[in-house]
Image (cartoon, rainbow, N blue to C red):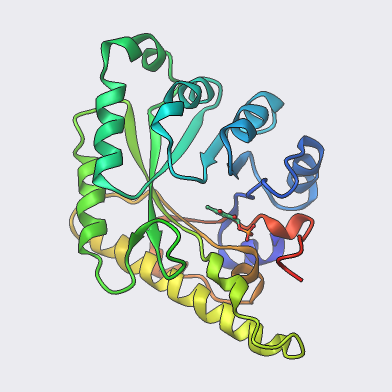
Length: 250
Ligand SMILES: Cc1ncc(COP(=O)(O)O)c(C=O)c1O
């Protein structure tokens, strides 16, 4: 993954749900090309790694549960950057309203930086995210709502996509070449749609700081990621399972 990320001009933000282990993340950072930025799949993982002292940038890689906003803000006070995935105007609005409540005043005033909101885009997995497979307009509208929000405790961090459906493209265990080609095509589509959205947003004057992409099969497929099409926007890859490989990968 380090080699792939380097060749793609991308930084590596590993998803740590597979190992949930400080020591393994440390090895990833020492020799695996990972930096101090990770994705987690639960708030408990976020709390653990916020206290582990080896990361300063965490994305919670599941939709925000507003009932756990207090715990999320606790994590956000302990790391330089805490990211949340947003895929609907309703969630954005409830987050803005909750952050502006007088009862949250103390919690938000001690944030190290505003909550980093990533627009989660759906490029074919259909688990969550705003669908960008054919139409970019709803995604553009939601990014504009984030960027023009009156809430000063949030900021637009970039676009986030996860092609979990790349696990399903193994037509025959005896034909790994075909599986790799299918995963590469999923990765290519993910990269193209993210780059198209980033470029549309740039034309509208919206700065897209980063595009974060990938899953273990799609990143391992040898796909080309859209470095050139992204211009000044940073590219990250966020595979996770590759650290230990669970049975899904088999
Ligand atoms: C939102 C999100 N991003 C990234 C990943 C990492 O994907 P993988 O473990 O397949 O490499 C996952 C895995 O579940 C995920 O849910």
